[in-house]
Amino acid sequence: MTPRILPAAVAACALATGLAACGSSNNSSTASSGSGSSGSTVKTTLNGAGSTFAAPIYQQVGADLKSQGLTVNYQGVGSGAGVAQFSAGTVDFAGSDPALAPADKATIKKGEPIQVPFALGAITASYKLSGVDSGLKLDGATLAKIYLGKITSWDDAAIKAQNPGVNLPGTKITVVHRSDSSGTTKGFTQFLANYSPEWKNGPGVDKDIKWPVGTGAKGNDGVAAAVKQSDGSIGYVEQAYALQNGFTFADVKNKSGKYVAPTIDSTSAAGEGLTIPADLGISTIDAANPAAYPIVSQTFAITYADPCKAGVDATKAKGLKQLMTYLLGTGQDTIKKLSYAPIPASLKTKDQAVVDAMQCNGAPIGS
Image 1 (cartoon, rainbow, N blue to C red):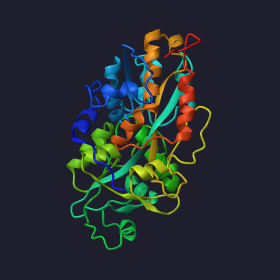
Image 2 (image 1 turned 60 degrees about the horizontal axis):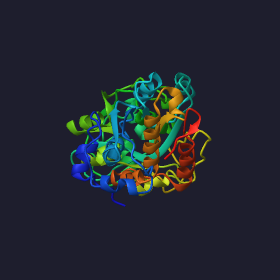
Image 3 (image 1 turned 90 degrees about the vertical axis):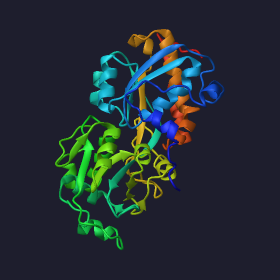
Image 4 (image 1 turned 135 degrees about the vertical axis):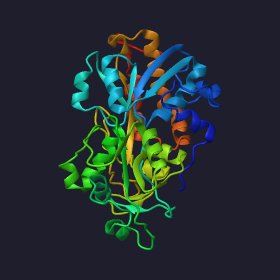
């Protein structure tokens, strides 16, 4: 399947991660009648921060919900910073790509958090290499060696072996990585660690690591901009950003030994057959499905099970439930339009049960 290119108007709005939610959209007039609407308007403002990976979704969903009186302001500052702001009480919800770790939960002291995974997205190995305008094939061990600084040119034997017949230049590889605390980084480094003991025992897996080589850039948009500037560069970039920048990205070898391109179908495949824990803290990196692209991240919307006990007023609590419900309903169509993959039905059912159970001071949040 050929990945869908973001419509220019949507992309220009959605990728502006540092701004408040974009203006009205064509879908907003019908949003309240679709699946996932709360069934009534709530006039309030919700402030969120976190994942740049998911920022285009929050921006467009915010535009969709304007007609229902709900203003969604979202800052794409990285998953780690978003969780920190949520813990500090400066935002109403956080966007995070990895699930909350025990250390994260320990910092959230105002109440019980809920994390709702609502979309899947491919983390591409995007590159700019003159003369190579079709997707290369790379495996996890080779990507790890590139990011360890062990492979330094595009005509290295390890890359050639996976790409017979491709005329690879001797261009120096310029490595680009995230400089901020990033869920995309955690997903990408988890994949590297799965195929490289040296990576696992060295830089390791986290939202922040000490990079052996390379140039740092802030956010998915920052990495995308850095890759775009330099011939020979490679960076890990969420698919929507890669498409918007017209990047070429590699087919990556999955757990079954197949080289798979990042498409909506192969991203969706990573969500099938998951074991879903009680706290919904799933991981889709290196999925077992033979049809799956191997570097797929989920993204979570995080708030409180009882926002009112955490100090939020009843109207805002109702707005938070409306946002969560919309993400699981009509928002799933928005997710597909933005070149992310919707979640499987089995996960959506469990997500919705958690959202339906949200309360305000111990009482159900009404619709």
